[in-house]
Image (cartoon, rainbow, N blue to C red):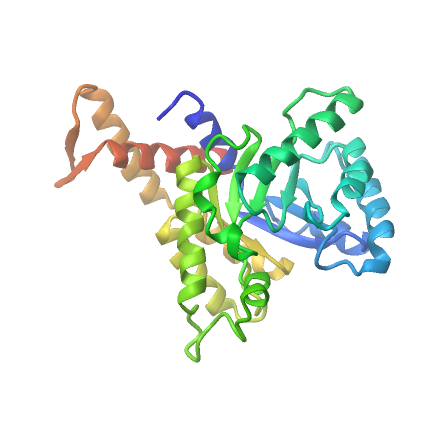
Amino acid sequence: MHATGHDEIEECSLMRSLLFVPGDSAKKLEKGLASGADILLIDLEDSVSADRKEAARKIAADFLLAHRDHASPRLFVRINDLASGLADADLAAVMPALPEGILLPKSNSGKDVTRLSVKLSVHEARAGVTEGQTQILALITETAVGTLSAASYPDASKRLIGLSWGAEDLSAAIGASTARDENGRYTDVFRLARALTILGASAAEVAAIDTVYINYRDDAGLAQECRQAERDGFAAKLAIHPAQIPIINEVFTPSVEAVRHAQAIVDAFAADPTAGVIGVEGQMFDRPHLRRAERLIARAASIA
């Protein structure tokens, strides 16, 4: 792992649940503070109609200013995408209030993240704050070219801490009538987008964040999807309703047993630093397993 990898992993480990809240509703934003989410995603994009964009910017900025010292949840803003013609106005409105991060929708490649990073540097300079302190999350599968560019995010920006995916915008982009089959499983195109997000995030050494589960009354379905996501390598999940947060947090919090097992692997390699493969509890583990164990322990420590 290169020198910055562990730092990035520790940053990424600070999130399990990311709750979207419409940026034009002060009431819903205040309610989001008590949701238990690790990150609030103050939305200026999909949940805000065109005639409410300006109002949403002001409400979002006022909310950020009022809660800038709030330790948890961390406050991010989803701006409109870079091709919309709205992103610069979004940033001009919210960056003086210093959100902790920006969620970039419809990212077509790592170049979009780099472009956003440059814009953020300008705003940070104007605000007189440390360059690079504003983090970036990116939604990378909402267009066809974005989905096919999942491998382009390594070295896009040191600000980047996570990649996520979405099915709804992609289905519209490619003309799919639905993202799921009659059994509720994602169809092949969307399973590919999901897999590419995990691989792209791993290549960039940032967190992979699973997409929303839109049926917010189906607790069992949400829990099952969370378990599958955690199994496959996702570190967190997007949410659209506060009721989803407890389930997401529970599934994405490493269990005591998982942490104990990971620590045993770390300790075994520490006792024999030159070993490439080592035995723990009757199983063989190599260096990739060590890195995974370190990530899990870092996640558990940050959550604690």
